[in-house]
Image 1 (tube, rainbow over the protein chains, first blue to last red):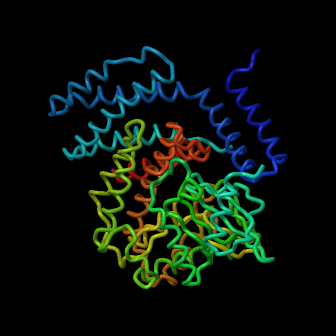
Image 2 (cartoon, rainbow over the protein chains, first blue to last red):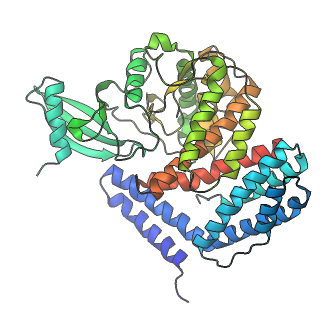
Image 3 (cartoon, rainbow over the protein chains, first blue to last red):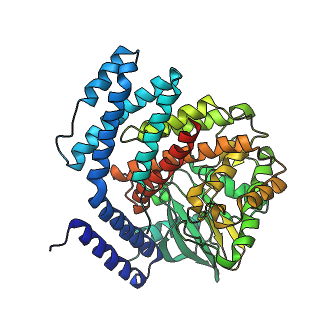
Length: 142
Length: 337
């Protein structure tokens, strides 16, 4: 068994925290403790980061596929259908983020459209999705 | 060899305080947020010693604020008798120390609680809470004209308070977002479609009144309210909602800011401000508070990602706090949809 990046970050964060009391300067102490906390966050993100992004992308494509057929705005409908047909070709975080940003931009356009059209059920569906996405992105302090 | 900052400070204060023998000692950076560099130092002159704090602009500032705002708020509320540090000097062009700065008295033997602490005030939470919510009520009840702060940035009429602030923070999101923000955009649409009633009065809004932004003595007494750099004119409910926000009480949301039960906090604020916290209006400002949080954290993330200000607090804010407030907003808006 070899240490994964997450293990290395976790152990390094723990060792860094152990050094904090030895740093006399209060600014340095506070700053180092936050660096250690950020390393813990990064350790968890190493494990879940690609999964979170890939799931969000798949869920946004699925909702586009479900809602696009009923849209009256032909241009938006075409953009949503095209986006729904895409797939993540790479699981690199940068590639997933690029797709995620494009899909979120479309999600905003779709949400504005259904709100303006008074389509409450569709709006509720989008908020349910956004809530689930937000919950998965929450970072635990513990 | 002495630090160039200490030498510059010494030269500046000798002239500013008309004290040719003044010497600067023990200059050390201390924690003070990512938006200003904060230093503690001692100034000795004529056999006396003053303990002072220097707040200097970083190379890039988190939220662009008028540099005199925080200093003038300290002056005004110090005169009013609120616990704030005594302001000593303000330099808006910053020539003496390369960047704009101000100097104020140090509050000794006092500490700021971490917003991450599970029980930040322990056995003193009730006493701290009484002071915390009452001081906020006094700020809300103070007359901006009498304070000499009527020219502060912000809304000039009660019906425009909400739209002025929504526009202000929407601009921050527009400028600093690294990727589309569907939750923030949805919150902005909701806020605009469901405006609150006009403010009961125009007040000085602290702008960042919360746990972590005041000093206490560890024995139940608040010694100083800090970080007035986002102070502006507006609806006093804005400050109340921000102080009540769950981010400052995530270990026990029923006790905002880690102090008192929510109803007690609101009652104290009402008693000291002479204002009413209408539940519907407060609910609007609570939604706004979380949106304002999102805007601030997006800005922090931008500062860090572009290396304009790589203080780790910015990375923490842009990661933990942004995710927290996005969740708060999405949960509320899903319920209201």
